[in-house]
Image (cartoon, rainbow, N blue to C red):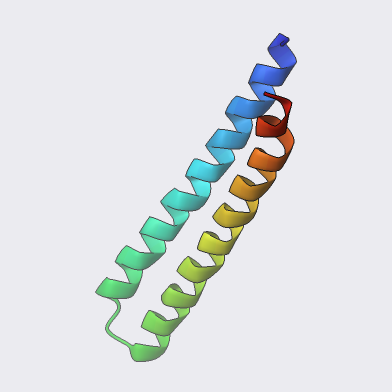
Length: 68
């Protein structure tokens, strides 16, 4: 495998981590929110980040692990 492959896979993993970090942040913000509507907004945003993470992980496995 070449250097570009490793760079792409490492960056893909960073993207997955960024989705996890955003989800964690929204969960914390939801817990801290006083207003129910704001709490619900942050819960919805956390849910979206979870879906993004799942999509990235699924595609990572499909693209990169199939080559192993």
